[in-house]
Length: 216
Image 1 (cartoon, rainbow, N blue to C red):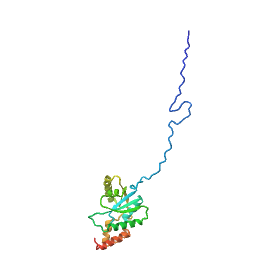
Image 2 (image 1 turned 90 degrees about the vertical axis):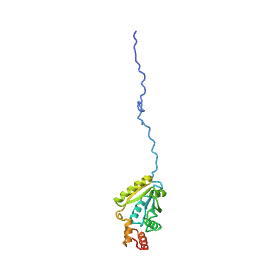
Image 3 (image 1 turned 45 degrees about the vertical axis):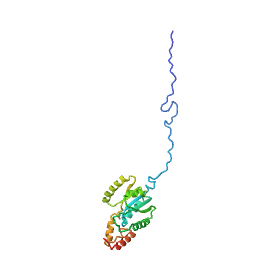
């Protein structure tokens, strides 16, 4: 007796490849991403400390070069602290009170929304910056010699206070040649310094030199 052998294949299984089955309509393999969350824009510098800067110096007297740095710095920060260095062993021509009054008067003439404060300090500039909650120290650059010196100072300050940044401000061409030391020397010799310093600064310096007997 013969038997016919009929091979019966099992029913074909449904094949799925990356989530698609035969006859299925194309679907996204990866579920759609949710819409991005709306993140409000914030300025990179938002804290009171990072939006404040300090500008240190003797300002004896305040010159047009100093005022140029202050003017440019006021355009970068919300608050600018002008810190007058006071050294016990060094007698300035103008007192701290005179210099503070001259600086505030000159800053008022800038018509800037920046807040200006004048303080005195005796120690390190970085310590004064921390005390005033200033996130930056601004320094004016007149030439290559200034750059070399200020770069070294910036490196030292960064090592002592990494949270305080040094911002270099190039001097405008019209005031690049002005030096406080030269202004004092010219005034002491009876020269005209009206083109080198604000009027109030010139008057105070000439008055002080006259009181001191035109000392040189």
